Length: 383
Image: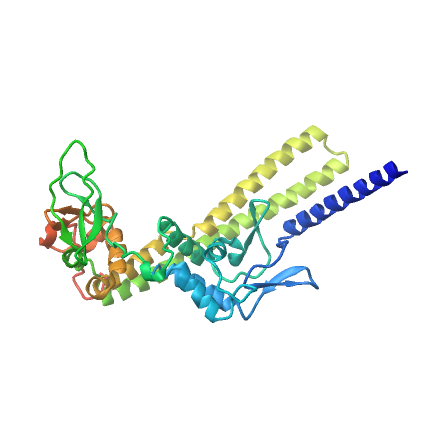
């Protein structure tokens, strides 16, 4: 009898475990995140779903936006959240790994992670996927640096990994000497001995500013170009919609043919082999049309978005070159010159990449290589 009781209890426990796992898998298939809700969400015990915490969610979104700018650390974020009431159960500030977990959790943009896989959720997202990717980009760029004390933070070297040595082709590193940041060649080339001198960060900043100034687009030209891009977007959307409507009509016709084919098979008008072959052919055509529609919908004038971004960047290039921060100048220099910046004899020089060569001016400062210039004959680009 004791043996039977043990057997029944073991069967009950195994069945309960399997039923629980089956229920969790079913929730995942419906797009509902199982388990406790993270910070910024609540568990609704009536519907067994997670809902947005209207009090904390705005602060979580602000934390993502703060960190995406690239000028704050985990400690700034945890202090910001602590000031707004987001703390541990003991009333202490969140630790750094909790901040990292928040920034790495896909639940905040509409997906959730379960059993090592990411699934699409039906809950309301707090942030956009673009903001999540921007935060991850900042995290990946800082993975080697995690200061323990805000008062002992290292001085960032903005222009490292931006230039290469003009003498040996090696990388450019930085070091602090007598309270100033100096940039020099890493001198790791064992074949060629590099003798390039040091350069102070202030002098290098002045040279990079001079290199960036010519690549500024006039405001009136930029506004006219943005107007043209907007019109092109509208025309491209209308054209793609017409093509997609035609393909949807073809898909409807194929569905009708599939239904008629099924009716003929059920009425014994055609044999199974003929039915199977014709159904396979029609399903293949339907899938091809659906894939073409998806491609048209996703890639509708996809070249216009990079063009719009370039126009806006070129419009603000002059202001960034003159009064922007060092980080903004670095980002702009990477866009304009790519990996073509060289430091040779305390002089920075480089050739721009396309399409920035359209804005290049005839300038010899810093050894800049001039691209093909373009200048409309009138104040607008209508001609």
